[in-house]
Each structure stands twice: as structure tokens, then as C-alpha cells.
Image 1: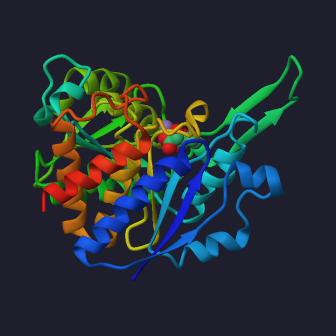
Image 2: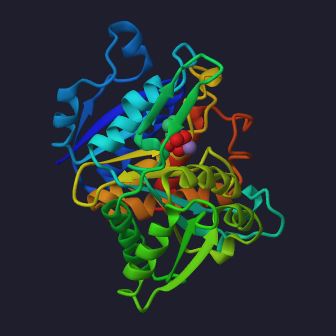
Length: 352
Ligand code: IPM
Ligand code: MN
């Protein structure tokens, strides 16, 4: 019996999560596993009503779950960062979810905006460090609001923090058994602290003689992700670079409508979410594409150990997208959020 926390959050979050939960229910029946949902209210609406972001006792309770399924957070009525830092980043930090795992997979050729790229060319995974860097919140303001204002956000990297995520990437490359390659993406030619990443990468990598070590500076990596996505297998990178590169990756795989992610601490409660935001202007309109949220359910199932259900779902999403029954991955597909959910369920049924 899996205990799954559900945090639909803001904007289109609740709509896409509802479709993900339909798929979860369907897969549980088909594959014979059971789960209990624990509904979590946190997000903008809850904050506006109660002034509460994420109570201290919440993270303690969440630790006892097997996984958390999150929709999206962010609301234009609240200044930028309040909800993101107060809920999303806080969950990542307090649960120490040090890997942000973001697969970049092209399911069908016609979805790729890059000329002549086929599904076999776009099959990589980004391991984004998820607890440090400029996200750590070290810094502040001096003489705020004056001509002499100083604003500082430190890029923080710890030896342990770098080592564990780099090790995760090498293990993953081995487990994937594809190109058996890890590419470190950094900016060590300009940011001195990235020397730590280079040293740790070389040291840890030497324990994996079967895995090729590659390196790219982030600016070049941004270009190659578009021009030559086939060069990559596993990318390991810093929090901020991983954030940016995975939006590029998402568009190479067809758009934010399909890109899912896992915030992972191996062996502990981990959190799964689409990489897209709350898209407030589409909220409540039943037009958002739920495929990324559905793919996040697949990652969640894979994480808790329901491999056959996860693989089956991935195959169904691939077949559905290959069939071109969903003309585009954006809000212009002509299909509603729930119709896309229906199509996923039908495709799973057809594949049985
Ligand atoms: C993401 C998002 C978040 C991030 C924001 C909402 C803080 O862009 O999950 O990629 O920067 O990590
Ligand atoms: Mn992002």
C-alpha cells in the first residue's frame, strides 16, 4: 500500500493532476497495486486564505509517505518567489531531494521542432543538483532601495552535495546501459567554484571505468542540446544550469506539455511533478495538456518499484503520440485536458 501525498497546487495544477490520478487509478487496477492518497492543500489559494505556506509539521508528516505528486505552484496575485521558495523549494530542501531528474525523450518525430531529429536522437536525461547553488538562499541586500544597493545570491556548492549527485549520475548511466556516458556541464572557465565540480567528477568518475566521461561548458551545451541532442546520454549539472537546460530540453522533446521530473532522494520520500508552471491564464479552462503530469505519474511508479506499470504507461504515451491523435502538445491541440486523459486511458486499454 503506497502512501502518496497529492499537492495539486496552483493554476492548471489541479486539472492536470486530476488526469494523472485517473491514470494512476487505472494502472493500479490493471497491475494490482494499492495506494492511499493524502491530499495536501498548500499553494497560493491556501496562502491567501490562511497566510500559511508550509507548516513545520507538514514536512515531518511528508517524510512518512512513499511519494508526493505535485501539480504546479505560482500565482500572479502573490509576489514572485513567495510560493516557489515557501513551498516548492522548501520541500526540495527540507526533504533533501538532491536529484532533480529530468528525462528528455522525443516520443514521435513530428513533435520535434528541430529539423531531421528522430526519436533515436533525443533520448537523454538530465541530473540536476536540487539543493544548492544560487537557489540555497545565501545572500541578501545591503542598502536596499538606495543608489548604493548591493544584492548578493551566492552560488553555494558543498563537497558532499556535489559528490552525491555526481555519483547518482554515474550509477544512472550504468543502469540505463545506453551510451554509458556522463557529461558534466559547468562554467569552470568563468566561475571558479565550478572547479570543485570538475575535481569531484574526475574522482568519482574514476570509480566507473566502464562509463565515459565527457564535459561541456553550459553555453556550448545549450547549443548542442538543440543541434546534437544525440551526443548526450546522462548530463549532470548545477541547479541553475539544470533549470535552464531542461527548458531547452523540453522544447526539443516537443514542449513543456510532455516534460516530467522527479525530485529524488534515493530510499526516501520523493516528489514528482511536470516541469511546467501553473500557467495561470489557462487555469480552469480545461485546455492544459496533462501529458507531463501523467508522465510524472510514470516516474513516480518507477520510483516506488512499480516498473511494469511505469513501462506500460510510457509505451502507451509513445503509441498515443505516434498516432498523431494529439495534433500538438500545447493548449492549441483542439483537445481538452480531460479528453487527453481519456485518450491515454484508451491507449493503455488497447495495449493490454
Ligand atoms: C522548475 C521551476 C522552479 C525552479 C521554479 C518554479 C522555482 O522553474 O522546477 O524548473 O527554478 O526550480
Ligand atoms: Mn524551471
